[in-house]
Image 1: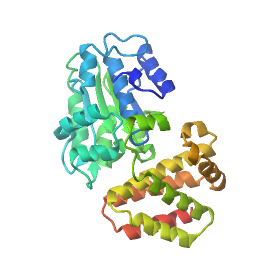
Image 2 (image 1 turned 90 degrees about the horizontal axis):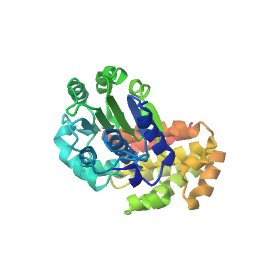
Image 3 (image 1 turned 45 degrees about the horizontal axis):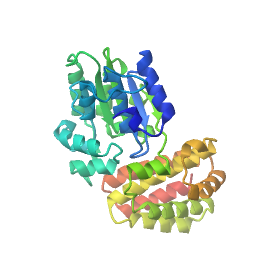
Image 4 (image 1 turned 90 degrees about the vertical axis):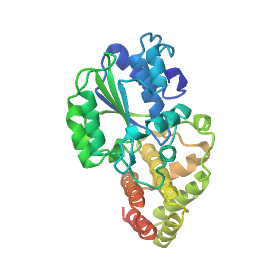
Length: 339
């Protein structure tokens, strides 16, 4: 993956190039992406630039042995960590990870679950995974340069896993870098979050979204309708309508779709938050949706998006925990009503 393969986030690309060129490389970078929004390609392009022996004009050469190893995800000094089911370690699924990332670097979280065969299960990053990272970093780099750890979805770490990783993340050995990719930075353990440089991966434009995700989600319009009805009910303080919307969410045909709707609502609320903060250019709102979002940003209390996001994140986690859906979404709409 070269920076030239990434068509957007020009300012972030310039910043990443500048880090390497100046030698001022943070020990840990936390990329905040929308699900499938380009954090993984950016992290891989950064690694390829970091390791490339012939980089020039702000990009890796794409042809040297180092570039080939990064592109094929087989560099011996780069370790990939991602959530898996039960007590398994990511190393068990490394071939599935390589196949998915090679085929579609802009993959979504649900695509990873499908590739690993863990749909419907709770993916986690365990304390054993953290200890494995520590053990691997006690060894010298195989090729004598940088040692890198890419962690996809650090919010899937439990407290034990985060605590185990904390020391080495806080005081890594020389020429060691952590790249973390999150969809929900507010859910990352504070001890981890506070030790990283946070960078926002700007959401894909409609054109770029269609380029990297040509199979636009068939649920998109249905999710838009539910979210629009939800916001209108909140604005009008219509509790009975909210109760009906909660039943609609509970009636979505699978737990995966319920989680996807919670993620969709979280991203929509982030757009409203950005508008309220005067950062509409970063929200990348589709043209046909601009009126709805601008009116919602004007009518909703400024605290609403931030608090509501936390409620939807909580609901997504509880869906995975196999709780009663009707009770869960009834509770969610009640929490939204009283914000």
